[in-house]
Each structure stands twice: as C-alpha cells, then as structure tokens.
Amino acid sequence: MEQAQKILEGLDERQRAAATTLNGPVRIIAGAGAGKTRTVTRRIAYACATGAWKPERVLAVTFSVKAAAEMRARLAQLGLAGGAREGGSTAIGHGAASAAVTAATFHSAALRQLNGVWMDVCDAPFPHLIEDQRDVVSRAITRVTASSDIDPLMVRDVLAEINWAKVSLVSLDDYARVCASARHMPPAGLEPQRFADIYGEYEKEKTSRGEIDFDDILLLVCHIMDDFPEAAARIRSSIGWLTVDEYQDISPLQHRLMMLWLGSGPDGKTAMNRNVCVVGDPAQTIYSFAGASSWDLLRFSDEFGPLAADIDLNTDYRSTPEVVSLANEVLAKSPNREDYLKLVSARASGPRISRTVYDTDFEEAQGVAARILRLIRQGVKPSECAILTRINAQQSVFGAALRQAGLKFRVRRDAGWQSSALADDAASKRALLEAMGLNANGVEFADDPGVTISTIHASKGLEFNHVFLIGCSEGLLPYGAPGAGDALEEERRLMYVGVTRAQDSLHVSYARTKDGYGAQQRQPSRFL
Image 1 (cartoon, rainbow, N blue to C red):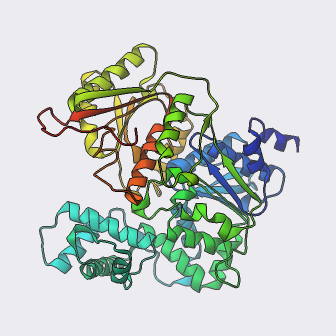
Image 2 (cartoon, one colour; image 1 turned 180 degrees about the vertical axis):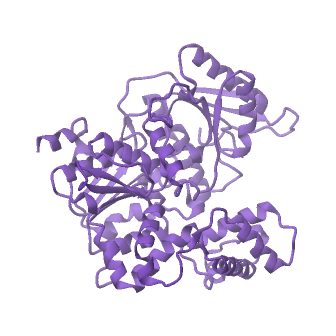
Image 3 (cartoon, helix red, strand yellow; image 1 turned 90 degrees about the vertical axis):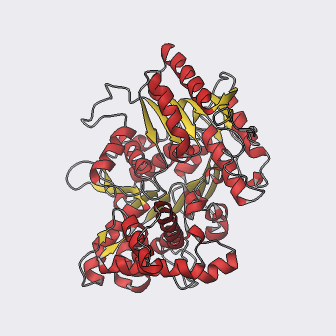
C-alpha cells in the first residue's frame, strides 16, 4: 500500500480526487496544460497497485499513436513495464505471468478484437486493410461519372465525405435524407444521390478486393457485438475498466462502440458496466469536420449519472500567466463560454506576448526566422521553438526563411484525421521512443531535430517553450469568412489550441498583404 501511495505523490487536490475515485463513472474536464495524461496514468497505476483493478481487464483508448505511446511511456515510468507495440499492452508486475494494461488507439484496440473473434464469426479470410483509399475512391468516381480525368481534389473531398458518413453513422441508404434534413452539402458540387452512387461503388470495389477501410474496423466490431452474442461476450469480458482520453473528439461511431464495450441494459442505451472514465476539454474540440463532437462529454452526466466524480482541472502547469490570460480572452466572447474552463496559471510571470504586424508574408517569415535565430543564440534549442500555421499552404515560405537562416526544421502537416490513429509496429515504436525522448537505439537524442513548423491541428497535444502563431488575420484565423455559428466557434477553439501550445513565450503576428501588391489589406483576427 505504501508503494501505491507513492504513485499519488505530486498530484494536486483535484488530480488526486480523480486518481483515487476508482469505481463508477468519472468525468474529468481537463484544460490545456492541466496534467491530464499525468492524472489518468496515475489513476490507472494506483488502481492496479491497490488491487482494485485487474490489469489484464484495463483498457485505455485515445485518438493518436503518439498519445497512446505517451500513455504507455508514462505507465512504464510508474512501474508498469511493457512493450511499445501499438495496440499492444503494458505489463504490470514481474516475470512471464505478468498481467497487462492495454493502452491503444480506438482503431488498434478494435482491430485486435476483430482479429481475435474473426474465425468464430466468418469463414472468409481476414480482409486486408486499405493503406491508401484514394485509388478505390478514384475508381468509384470513374464508374459513376464515366470520366477518366479525375481531379485529385475531388478524390480528396469525396474520400473525406465517405469517412464522415461512416463515423457519423450515416448509412448509404440514408445519406440523401440526412442531407435534406440537416442541410448538409455533399462535396465537389455533387448532388446527394450522385454522391451516394459513388459511395456505393466505393463499397463494391472494396468488397471485390477483399479489403476494409479504416472505419470499417470499428463498424465491423460494432456489427459483431450486435449480432454475435458469444463473440460480444468475449470482447466485453476483457474490459472491466475503460478510460477514454480526448473524449471531446469522440464520433458517433466511436461512442457506439464504447457503449457496446460497456454493455447495454434493458433499454438498449444504459451501460451495464459503469466503470468508465472520460477525459477531455470542450475548448479543444477542433475536429468537427471529421465527425468529432464535445456533445457526449458535456452530457456525460445525463447518460451515466449519478457520477462517482465530476472533476474540473483548470490549473495550467504548462503556460505562463501571460499566455493563459490570452487563452482565456480568446474564449471569453464565445456564446458557449459556459462550456469552457477558465484557466489559472501555476507558473511565475513571464515575458509579455509580442504582437507584430508585417507588410508581407515574406517579411513575416523573415522576421519570425530572425527572432528564432536570436533565441537560439541566447541558448534556446531549435526544437524548443515552433511556428504554427492555420493551413499547410502557409508553411513553405517559413521553411524557406529558416533554411536561409541556416536553421534545421521539421514540418508537421494535416495528413488527415485518420492517418495518425493506426500505424505499423515500427511507426508506433518510433512514436513511443520520441515520447520518452529517446532515439531509435533507445538512448537520448544526440542531435536536435530542429524548429517545428506545424499546422495548429497537427500541434494538438504538443507543447513548445517558444511559439510563433502566424497569420493571425481575418481570412486566415479565422479561416475564410465564417459568420456566427459552429464554423466560427471551431476557429475560435483552434486559436485557443494554438495559443495554449506555448510554455514560456508566445509571439503572434500577421502580414497586411500576401506579396505587397494586393489592394485589399488584411485585418487583424477578431479573436485578438
């Protein structure tokens, strides 16, 4: 028991309350920098160390390989030594008979479950997972439109819509009706029925190849748990305690799978297993375009109440008071303000936030590169600096400026909502080692990886000592010209996420014009 108590050392009062409430439904609203992963992993380790939980029946799911890898790394530091394979588990105890805690992405956990029961529910060979859906989508468009010259942007947009329909549980037969009732517009100027025809051809092409796509993994597990009681019971028996990280990003499909994992009562809705902990932050919901919603996080008490604990973590241990103050200002004018936490910094005061206006994008890039160079000359590591952009297209000019300044850098782009949630073993191992600050040989980095240039979306879950949030003008951040409503609120939350990546200093800027020749000048972002 003494060892278990040591696990709780260093937690503040609210974190400790969350970590020691081990039975029943628990909701943790955790603001940026509030120690979310620390609290969740301590809770799991404490529950296992006290014997309250059986490690082999503990499942913790999140949304990216990196997040799952970091969770396993934290558990390993708490004495839960284990492997680094994505979808795998982290062992507790010593020796060959050690039990295991599973920390994985939704998709990798479901894929392992699917593999485990497939032979009992289907005579066909296990399907192949499509690595790149674009070829299948392109063939489907060609069949429906009879055109051989397919625009790659159309393929991209149709693929995104297929993925959205699946995670939103919109069936092929219901697609046109949903579009009409929800005023949802299909992509690429397609009529709803035309898109549905392409979607149908996509499914036929996939089936003929013996393949499944990314979201079919979740759909198939849901189908098996609905229609095959023995297989469902086997999957469900392996999950005694469920933790769902980043719950503000859960989609209807993932929520459906979660409820099936927990088991439904007589009404078909209420969970039979109430040992579930959800963790999230409504203010960091930035993937609505991919079906994510904070709705389930906000109404968790309605669905699972009475709750064993409902805890807000609003102390930001990451950012200075100056950064936290701006983050709070960004959210202050939101019509949904009551849904968001107001952060309080636990750090000492830091430098004022710099706000700079440049004449052109080129000058903005040159100015940011010069500031980073000065920081490095003062002893800052390049990897402690990040340039955050709203869209991928903004990144090339900043890369060129850093290259001209002789600075090493790496780029993180928006590669799609789904690409980071399932990866091969090698990629997962790299993610785990990176989360632990180790290189491929398992030793600490000998060479700094350089300045990070990242979209705000791709930076979620990361933090940097010095952040340069660029392009803070109307049209870029917020992107386009959104009126009051959901689109504008998504952009506001995106600004909040960008601001809260900064630990020590934050530099916001924008350029009046793209190249100095535009007659119309940009205006500063309404969020600032």
